[in-house]
Length: 323
Image 1 (cartoon, rainbow, N blue to C red):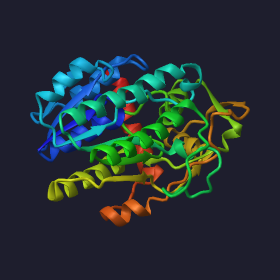
Image 2: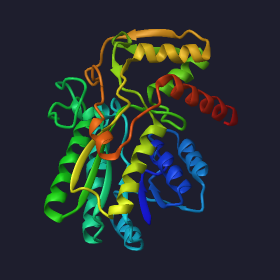
Image 3: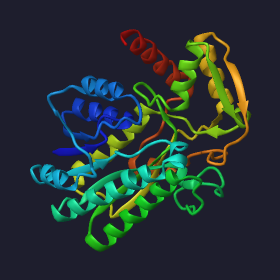
Image 4: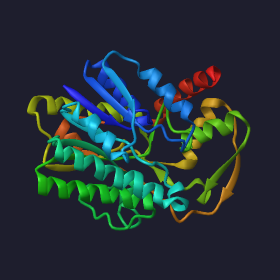
């Protein structure tokens, strides 16, 4: 069995590649190693994955010619598309980066898959698709027509494009709406890593809307183990469903204030807080109803933030020492 992971040097991609290789599944990874955040972290993730079942190539999904050549040489059983331009706030100032990397790049990939008769694709969506109007807990049947950022709009677009390709070209898709994923090797622009860095360095922490925003923080191991359940089922059936979308989240939302307090307790330090007004791009809350995934794949998210943050801190402190 051969699996291609796009965005393999990213946070979720690297963890997934590591897990699948440990299960003796052959994984091919591609990533453009962008400079959105420090490249060293991405390269270090690749060293961390290192496994005889893992093969990596630096490749940009916008490079359609070389992407086609690469895919044509490898008959992949399944493609897991995790590559994207991340970051909600960054999309306000740099919308074209999101249209190019989250829509055009995905379209390139799908056109090549259609041409090369690769019909099974798992792709990353986001909790941000629920936008402004939905009531918590969020479930997959709710409308997703009130995105607050270009980032969210691109993820909604990817879901719609996937449905179209499924309907027109008999391709099979699973879309995964991730809820605030955190853990070791996480992105430095996300709140868990920002909070730890600021606390350790006695720098000011900016909290928007008084830290009252509520997030469904989900630990990375729970996410990649959930994806592995899809792979296990696929190995038996050799086919994904025609088009399904799932929430992947712990389902235990907490305030950003409380989340910060947990990190403060772990470090035995009190943060210097700077309060700012609520940003228009920020959702008030995210709250996953993951019961559809639990029913279809017999899988339950388990890691609470107390356990997850302890693991993140242990990694963070050891990684900083090595730098």
